[in-house]
Image 1 (cartoon, rainbow, N blue to C red):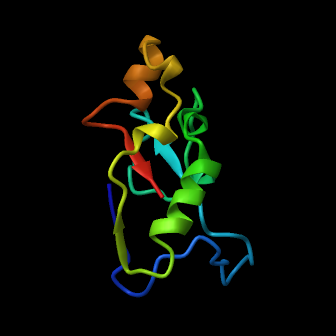
Image 2: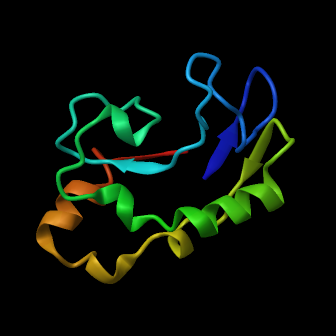
Image 3: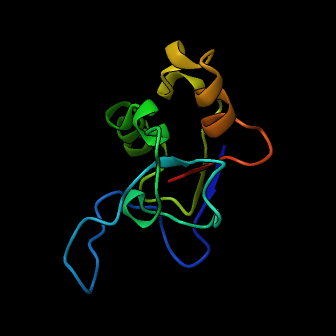
Length: 106
C-alpha cells in the first residue's frame, strides 16, 4: 500500500485547525457506503464495524517507524493489521473485503 502526501509530510499527530482533535484515523469503508472518499470513521455508517477489524495500534507503530516525516512510504503487507478471523463470514467478506467496492483509508 503506497501512502503519499503531495503537499507536505506524513504525520500521525496532526491536529485539526477547527476542532483541535487528532486528524489521524484508519478504517475500512464498507461496500454499503455510497461515497468512498471519506477519511474519518465518524463520516460514514459502518453497520457491521468493518473498521474494527483493523489493529490501529499496530498500524500506528508501523507508520511511525517507516512513514512519519516523509512525503511517501510503502507498506509491503497490510494483512498483519487486519483481523482475518471473521473473513469467512459472508456479510464481513461482502461488506469489508470486497476487492472492487470496499476501501481502506489512513
